[in-house]
Image 1: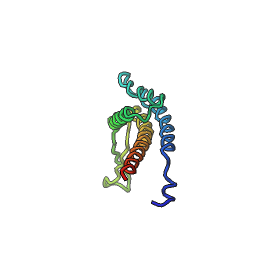
Image 2 (image 1 turned 60 degrees about the vertical axis):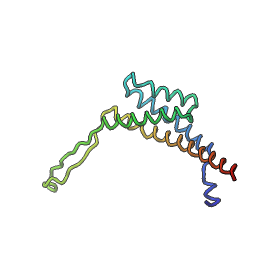
Image 3 (image 1 turned 90 degrees about the horizontal axis):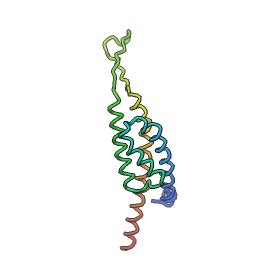
Image 4 (image 1 turned 60 degrees about the horizontal axis):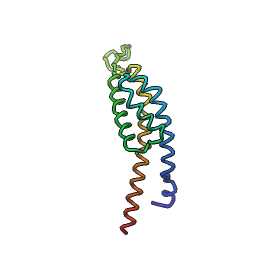
Length: 147
């Protein structure tokens, strides 16, 4: 690794700041697209995640776990509300049946959840970035103590 490569690396603080910014987008996605499209009994987990984010507890393991579970649940809901529909295009150029177009159809709930999912995933990735970097720093510190 060259000096320029080291210079390009972000600090833990910069990555943490990015995670806090992503957390705001996540709260918006939760409030606008996720919570309204869940049954009332299913809303407690996303609300708990919002509470953790708003109280700045985003780097705690419970928050990561809650986010992972929610991403999994939302992904399944999107799949359950999605269907591929094949359409045959009959015209003079495609009389032998080669012109089949596939369309993805989603319910309105699945569509809203699909809008929110990338924001949840981005937030999750930023949290994991910070955790990975902190683990790397600790590992290097232990190595330095042994040498």
